[in-house]
Image (cartoon, rainbow, N blue to C red; front, side, top):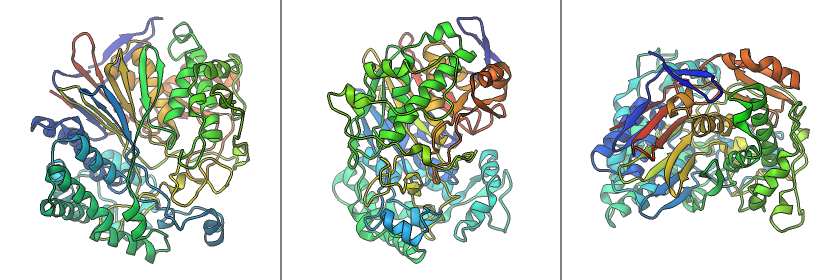
Amino acid sequence: MAFRHTTPEGREYISHRPQVTAREAMVASGHHYASQAGLRILEKGGNAIDAGVAAGICLSVLHSDMVSFLGVAPTIIYLAKEERVLTISGLGRWPKAASIEWFEKNCGGEIPAGVRRAVTPAAVDAWLTALARYGTMTFAEVAEDAISLAEDGFAMHHFMHEHIKGAEADYYRWESTRPVYFPEGHLIPVGDRVRMPDLAGTMRRMVRAEQRAGGGRAGGVRAARDEVYTGETARLMVDFIGRNGGLMTLDDLADFHVLEEEPVMTEFLGQQVYACGPWCQGPTLLEAMNILSNFDLLALGHNSPGYLHALMSALNLAFADREAFIGDPEFVDVPIDGLLSKEYAARQAERVDMDSAFADMPEPGDPWAHQGGAHPWRYDGAHRVPQEPAPEYQHDTSYCTAVDSEGNAFSCTPSDPANSMPFVPGVGATVSGRGSQSWLDPAHPSCLAPWKRPRLTPNPALTLKDGAFYMTLGTPGGDVQPQAMLQVFLNHVLFGMPPQMAIEAPRAATSNFPNSFWPHAYEPGSARAEARLLNDAGGALSGMGYKMGSWPDFSWPPGSVCAIVKDPETGFLLGGADPRRESYAVGW
């Protein structure tokens, strides 16, 4: 059955999944088992944080090819009673011994695949920090389903199989990875069982540490967390990394903790949109929204050539500023107030020629002038990167979100793939390879430095309307993430589509900037669109100067958005999950 919606200008869209609704609580994630695990937690009396953590840990099993238990997990939380939004960084740091000079000397000026690009694992710390501070359950309770899935197995699903098959040599090259996906020398077929006994063993060590600990529930959760950073798991990680030429030490792990930080925020279309700070690309989404607030998008018409041009132009400007200014704010003086200033956005919007695309990445703007300061610095070298097509597939990331009956919300984008990092024997997960999102140019805001965080692509979002929770939103997709999220947000908020339909509508994306992943390839003027959208608007966009490429309809590179919306009129929760991958929304 097809579900239809007509936009204000008369364009009809259909969705192929029904709009999922819930009266009390809802979970949406990159796999139905993870969503069901989160809902089971809610049914046992847990809150949204408990449920979100349970779903995220399950994704590290069900999507272990692109989400690591020891990877990254940037998180946004809304606490209903406090009416407060907070973020947990969920991003690791370079070992203290790492430096540009070391990579120049020992790696030929590359950041090669393997343990040399490892940064401290952050996902497990992020999940357990959230659980200890804002959850209600123990680690053993929220990890129960993930342990079962890892120990007893789950069916190899089509997306995992297609994903690994598309880069089979990259996965197969790691001896310690083969037993997981290639136990008999070939990739496990769709429908056959995938087991991860080493990962189940790691989680069981954590459960035992929790059970031995004092300090109540929160103390037990912290003890489970410490097993990874100072216990046997830490020693297994460091020994493996050291034997294979990496730099991480036990001191690096013992000294690491994720941070709870204030979000960044902007007002757009009557909503307060929250994102994680400039240690990730969250500000890029908000800056693009601010720029678009200067255009009459409704008048342009949904997915018309003019609308898509305005959208991609705003994103081009925001990505140019990402390259010039965004990096770990502990190391970089980021002009975040200027970047998110409405006055600055208006100046940026003036740079858009509605008849012509940017032939290459625009020059960055001057946000310093909009936060009361002179222009102390900007990075001007982004155009020097190799001008070649960026890789079509970025092997990373999923998403999970939960909203409970009290109105608490959890939004998290866990990540880190197994194609460029080997599984650690006895641990059953890859250590975060996010060093691949650093640069070896010392002038770049995201250049490599000891104990610095790379600039992260995963960037969950959350919105309030009139001060009350309205929406969670997120997706995998590397540099496509803020672009897919922006289009889904506009589809729903501006064009009135139900969340499921807003997610299924066709998408386009620009890639007119250096790719976030090493070696940061750059294809000036390039953009892509799903075939059904390219058929309608591709000729006009090419005429404006876009170098258009095509994605097959409902293929996975345009992202896999999940969202939960609370309808302010009915009080119902509306869930959306992207059929481009394995995503599902469930609720009650």
